[in-house]
Amino acid sequence: MGAGTFAEQASRFGRNMILTRLLAPEAFGTMAIVLSAGSVIHTITDMGVKEAIIQNPRGSEEHYASAAWWLALGRAVSLYAVIFFLAPWISTFYGNHELLRLLRVVGLGVIFDGAISSRAYIAVKGMRFGKWAAINNGGGILGVFLTVLLSFFVRDVWALVLGNVAESASRCLLSYTLCPYVPSLSWDREAIRDLLKFSRGLFGLSFLNLIFMRTDVFVLAKLYTSAQLGLYVMAVSLVQTPSGFIMNLLGQTLLPTLAHVQDNAARINRILIQVTGVLVYVGAPILIFTFFCGRWLLSIVYGRSYAVAAASLIVASSVALANLVNGQITTVFYAKGMPQLHRRCVVIMAVLMIVLIYPLVKWAGIVGGQIACLVSILAGYGFQLARIRHFTGLDLARYGRMLLRPTAIALAVGALCVTTRLATNFTPYLTNIVLGIAGTILAYAGNIFILTRNRLDITT
Figure 1 (cartoon, rainbow, N blue to C red):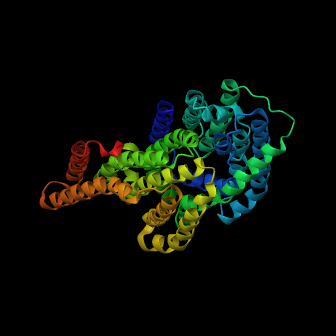
Figure 2: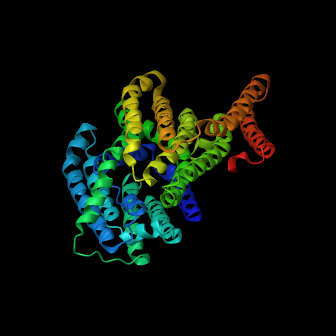
Figure 3: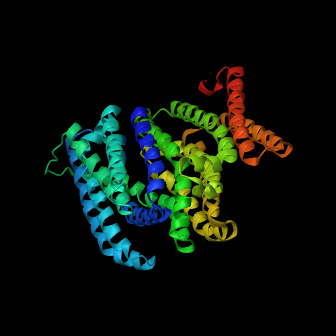
């Protein structure tokens, strides 16, 4: 699973490096609007079929899998119809008539996603991750290569749209190739009832998450040009690529793992503390690197014109780390079959985004979008900590020690680097690169020392 996810994210990283040199920033800004608008409708009707199959003890039974497949396909077809008829209104709202055709084409990917073989999800439930990696990551890699190929002939946003649809189609085809499946025409009422019960607990979560994740794009698309939005989106995606790799890997492995021990609260808490500790010990030093080397990194990866979005990259790095840590608590709720416990957290994040995004963007510019994200995720994370304490009996003192040690080291090293920066006479560009690399190494050295001195407290 790790190898497949890494290969896919590496190919996406390489794709972005190539496309930013072939396509104008406007193409990425327009694509962000297309994906965000389509995602609104997609998430409103999310049923969580994959999660339901993995979590439910009956998930591998034929009647349950068949019911899940028909529900997923019916939802996908209905969803495409909604996207098709709403496309003219969305294009009028943004004053871009090209969005009409773009939305109707990119919506085809929804049908392919809904038609994926239920046997592919059963493979994940059985922890046969090799097949799922080949389907999910293999389809992603095929879509990436096709997008790059198209960009040499189609030098606009259509290369991105067609590549996105090809990615979904590739996953669907691979799912039936590697996990052959023919759904039954019979209906199991109990299976339908279980699926709908899980879906009710999930209802609204994806849409609320979308508000948190995409409100910045909707607001910036109205306040700034497509070119400025493209610079922002690509800078944020630079940190979302590796964080997405980690989030997908942990989500797809920990969900079935925790589902197997869902009645053992002590074991769940131990796994949660261990995974969270690893994330913070590895992630905190990276924040130092992005703070000092953000402009240099964007210039190397995308080109000098993208360096102006360095502030967005820096704040996005903090958002990504907080989101990763918060996501592990969410996985516990899903594994226990109670996704509704996550709803209030998402409501908090969505409301804060709606309230904060406009004033912060007007005050701080484009980077205000990520500042609003950071405030929102920290508030939601704090709420989830209080909730899981009562849900599983999590020892917050032990959990807090895992967070405070690497955070304190990163802050101390960062302060030292800032002081050094002010005392040097070298060019700011070169000094920032040296301090960023040296500070990251020093922070990791401090983390290793703490772990060794405390006899690897992270695993005990």
